[in-house]
Every structure is written in structure tokens, then in C-alpha cells.
Image (cartoon, rainbow, N blue to C red; front, side, top):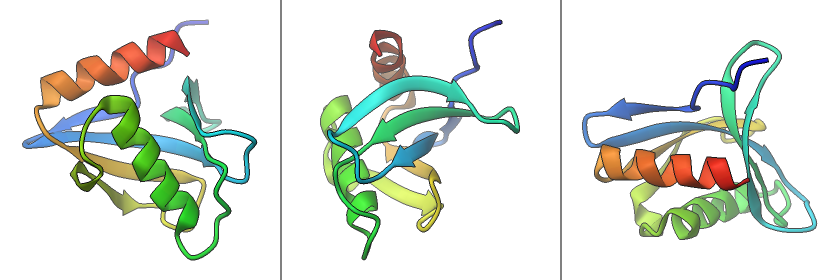
Length: 108
């Protein structure tokens, strides 16, 4: 089986990344790339926060920002606020963000 394609795409001023979030986990972590049943590639993430009042989404934003060494304000939720699969926009240099995402994905 071939490796899944990257779960991110370039945008003019950043990168759009698709994430599958598991809330109420024992730890906060990014766990590499997976493929959903429909064929979409996702970055797997888990957070300790519960999915109430946006707590898990905020924890995901903080986790991505910390892991990529970018400000939390540079990460915004574009879609999927109430679902497990979310689309986030990372504002910044797209090439730099892609290399950081690729490095994170390959170590997990």
C-alpha cells in the first residue's frame, strides 16, 4: 500500500490542512498521516480537552501552533467545528509550513 498523500494544500498566504481530531484523549499529540474511508488524507491529532464549548478545537489550535512553532493566532478553524474532521488554515510562508508539517508527519 502506498503512503497517503499529504493532507495539506497551498493557499496564497499559507496552508490549508485537514485534521481528524480525537478529543478526550490521554494526551495531546499529532500522530502522523492517515487516510479516511473516502480516500481523503488527514493529519491525526488527539487532545485531552472535551468537545464542549469549543474546548477541543482551541486545544487543537494550540497544539498545531506549538508543534509548528507558529503563533496560535496564525491558526484558524475554517470548517468542521462540530465534527471530527476539521479544516484549518495556517497563515504564513507556505513552503516553510509545508516543510514543518512534513517533518512532523514523518516522525510520528
